Length: 257
Image 1: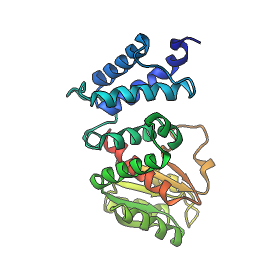
Image 2: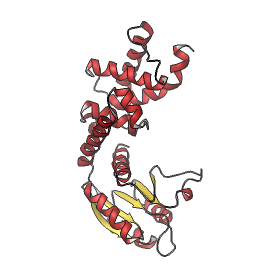
Image 3: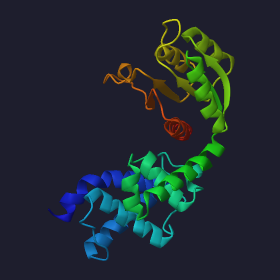
């Protein structure tokens, strides 16, 4: 298989990543073109012992790192990257975007960045912490189980956010959202009086634009194939780190719209 055949399908995703990394469509595309020219000329080679996509990203980041990002310009893209990502330390920024934008597992990111999985975990944690410091907001929790609500409240407060209210029913949730507009909603699906967290969120979203994370034991009710579906869905029982990561990403990407 030729270089074009093996790498071609992955180029749109590399361009997406490059634009997110540089914060500029022009600059991102310039780096991708530079990487492809280096491959075509034989200045760098694809590592044939790993997957083509992984090797392509590895080559791209080696060129990005060796240049010191000096080709970057001041033009801004209309994508997800903004000043918050720009201020992240370079390796934290790379690891964060490979996970958050490209959806790569830590094992693949470690190969791309030529380091250990433990280092990747630390880099992503550092990036999330840097972002969280700038994205503190007020949170509405829609959950009818007091113990679970208390657990979620604790996780939210650990990240530095304020919990304005905990609602156990649809009507209570809508009322609390009207009293003080939340910057983030964490919602269960099935509520105490038989009402629906989905309906509560739908009514709230008619009035305000706010990111929503569903935490539910009934994910199948939200993954039907119908649109729209939630971008952030966590199954119960949940892992605290998964909830924290979802909060960070939901706030980051929503505020970058």
